[in-house]
Length: 310
Image (tube, rainbow, N blue to C red):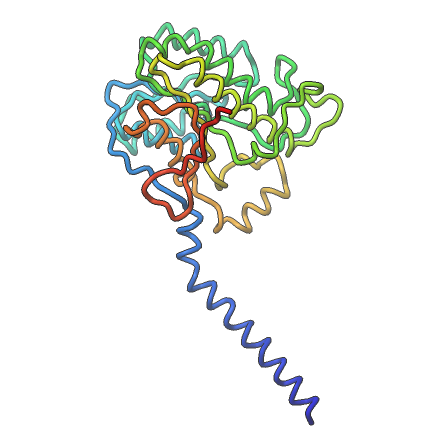
């Protein structure tokens, strides 16, 4: 009898847990979603007369960043490898914002020839550049190299943007005050600069390769900010958060997990908020060499973990 009573008691506890846990999750869902969403750029800044470049602006964070800048009145250059997708995105942004100054330009960050051609045409056609957002990137690619023989993550995520920034730097200085915004990732904490095997020819792990390239973004920002002191051109890096985007398309497992846990991921609009903040917030006019990340539940602004300098 006592054994039966004990079993019933256990079943009762299990049943209670089975009912109460989903209920608690349902009640907590709005708070969890708010926590995941993070902060929002509250700046009312207008950008009429300003020229901005956003790389990889045909989808995800880049597209939402370009949309926000266009809504603020900027002339936005959508710099992408896939022209058809870029034109579709630009057309959508024009219709949504009423800003017809959303221009598509070909840019393949995996090919230095394409980068140089983009910069040459831009400099010939545009007399000013106020905002450069190095947003495009690849993640978890099978081993491959760029047209110039660089490992794909390092080549696209870092070296391509490094060259693009270098080629446009004088125009940014001439247009000052100007801003350079490098989209990095919290993954940079897992990175190393492997000088003995920069291009993964001795050993290769796609996850680590991504981490290495994101660390390179952060270190690049640190040195760039130091060299630009006194020019009124600032350089800052950021972590956008975990975002529902096409970035994980090269990994079946990650794509599957992204779908299952999509509730716990930022939308592209939410992910773009830190980029937008770094690009437009008035209080950042003279802030440089910093790493930004919107803290969950913090709606007033970003947390700056500290200078990238030593």
